[in-house]
Image (tube, rainbow, N blue to C red; front, side, top):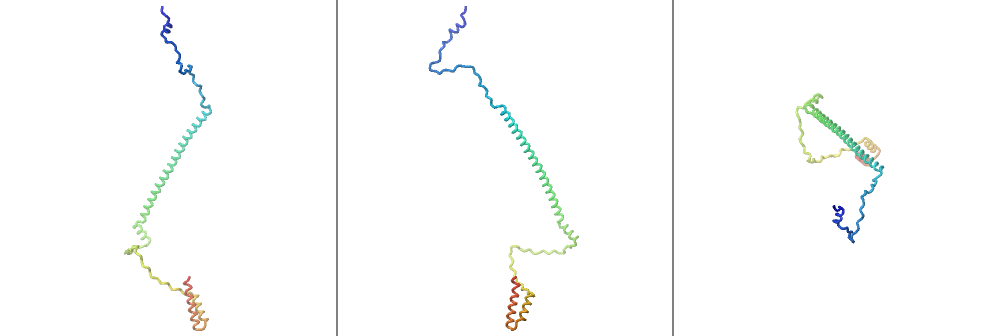
Length: 186
């Protein structure tokens, strides 16, 4: 008969010894249970956050669409303006050509002949004058003062009213001097 299996084990097993006397004691072993979950936020807060993020996304997409539409509208108006500038440049060139054709010397001569003008037989060229050479001052003399009809009447009446040769001569010369200086002062 064989000895029981438990006996064999017990004979080879180590003797149980306790922890050393100075070592700290271990906490007792227990079954691990997860900590209860905390609710992060109520459903109303999560729902409002979702709505807010959706509104921000839709708003940013609308802003991109509006910006794209404004850019397209600006490009259309710019191309219209460029087309108008090109048309105006073409019109200006055509008008310059028309003016050049009308101002051509043969056309001018032909229209002058239709108007009754004749072609000169000889052409006289004026001499060239330098513009940087100063000209001498011309000599001028003052023009004689015009005698008016009122001063002649005053002179004759003054001479007739005074008697005596010396008085009439002095009065006559004084009145004539006054009469000649009056128009010059104006």
